[in-house]
Amino acid sequence: MANQANQARSTVEDAYRGASDVGHNVADAARRTASKVGSAISDGYGQAAEKAAESYDYVRDTAVSWEGELESFIKNRPLTAALIGVGLGLVTGMLLRKRD
Image 1: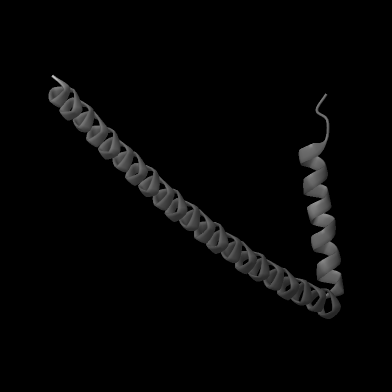
Image 2: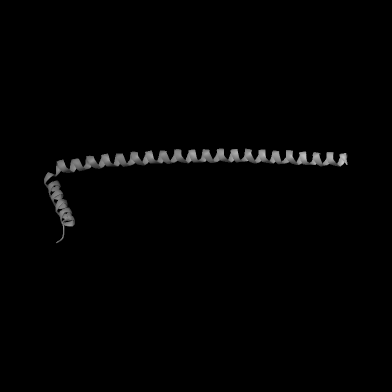
């Protein structure tokens, strides 16, 4: 009977060690997966920030270019520019006026 008890205890201890090993393996796998996910998120954020900076630079450069072109147009054709401004003002006023 003592021999059977020792065998049962040994079997339980082996099962406990096996379960413990499985638990450690699962925890290690979870840590590795979390690390990979964190790296992927960090890389994605870096790429998004880089694209946003590139887009900002493009828009800024385009706006500066348009500003130069508009200034040149106004200097070369002041009467045309003034008439365009008056026309835009009239159209805007007509669209925004209160209708009674």
